[in-house]
Length: 113
Image (tube, rainbow, N blue to C red; front, side):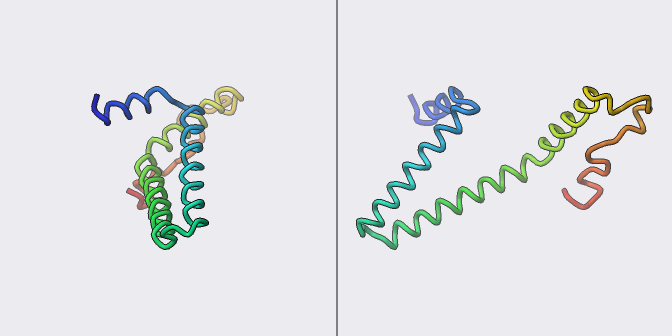
């Protein structure tokens, strides 16, 4: 079994809360290892730099995920907003063309591509 197949299977097996719990567990373990190495005085400068690099990589990954999923998030929020209008009767007798939209202009019209 290839390592990529192993990790793909592990990621597919855990979803939602189980995945978040697993990620939090490993993040705490990694942080504890870095803290222990620093306290023991083992390559203090190297461990500090490595920890900062990992933290920066995590921030960049979150930023890339957020920017890449912008349109998907817009669609999900729009559907949830429309669904709440249907449940609460927020549409009333107004025609569909006059109903409120969460994002009336769209990203392309305000200069966000």
